[in-house]
Image (tube, rainbow, N blue to C red):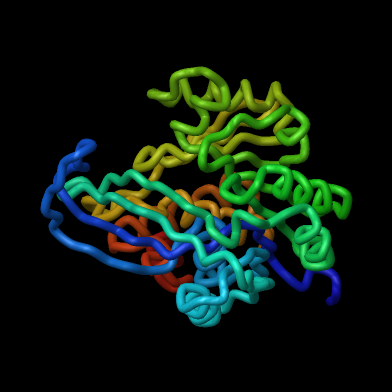
Length: 309
């Protein structure tokens, strides 16, 4: 593998998304009728890899899947998006799955993830993929696989001079030593609030929360704010990048993954952080106009068309 063979190397999980559309979630002991159901590819790492691949990046995904039909489907999805995957199959543990509730009318969602085989990713798996990490311009990971595995990936990337991104999702307690390995940390409002103990309801709130993450060691905080775009916070100050108006959201599941995949590719291809955030916002905005997670990721032509409006 030659130097910088990949624009982006991504450590993360693949799961099969099982999406249910309904006006609301049932309470315990209650059964309600839903308005629709869909099954498709998901998992933050896989979604981000698909987003990055469709956005024009050379992408290497590091994960685990089961020896089952869901794992077969994963490989088909990656191939269609131009994603190269290092994905050993676990004979004794099934590919993971996610329950996704999508609210009729708003597209808002609630999600439960069972990582399955990808939950077994350990530091030895990451060490085995070290050459792929070192051969990338950007390395990105999240918190759906075990946190020590994410930390090991960030350590390998940092030692090799590879730009590092942590998408701290789902929200979890992480220490300052892990944040210090991150050139960029990309929480949404909920995750930023959990990491800092601060409310994130306004742009000023987002700037303060970002500053708190910088104080803990992150190089730059890029807070995703849904339709309000992103707040970029560095040691030099805060910058707001507005979102794109693409009409009513159909399904917001996967929008954060869309942003992160686009953001990583843009950085890898030479954009500065503000331009990369704008590119990521375009990817995320387009993704909410269609149903699904990986299935909703736009092509590079669609992204460029929105950016040129």
